[in-house]
Length: 154
Image (cartoon, rainbow, N blue to C red; front, side, top):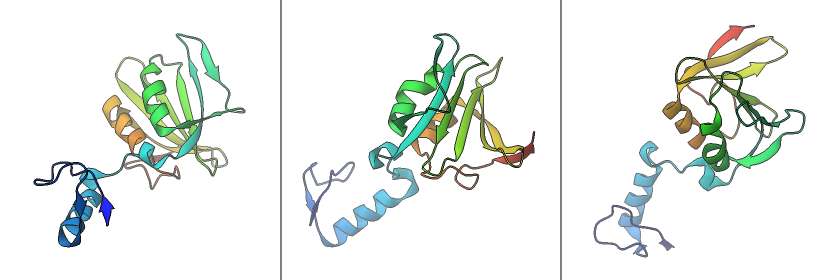
């Protein structure tokens, strides 16, 4: 038996005990893509480096700090404003996701650099799309985990 919040589930309050077919149906419902568990509920951590021109605040890529996806989302995304700003996110395998605002519009260049190949997988994203990416940030940062990335030589 398991206690689950009955969000939107008629006939059960938030501490209802669901059993049998009811529990199975609700579990299936919450496993659907529409109700994915945000990455910060999984308590995954990444290492980040950044530079924000306006405040002059920076963390070097040689000495990144650990942050959860939730902290990245809440504390860093809105600070990316200048075309000189950047945010780098490293996963447990040292894969890097770099985020750079573009000048003149509300888009961001998001890339996975491949230093040895002198290339990257990248694409432009609007702020809302970038927020969604950070909410669902994959544990391993690679081109398969981020849709529509394109290979570009440097």
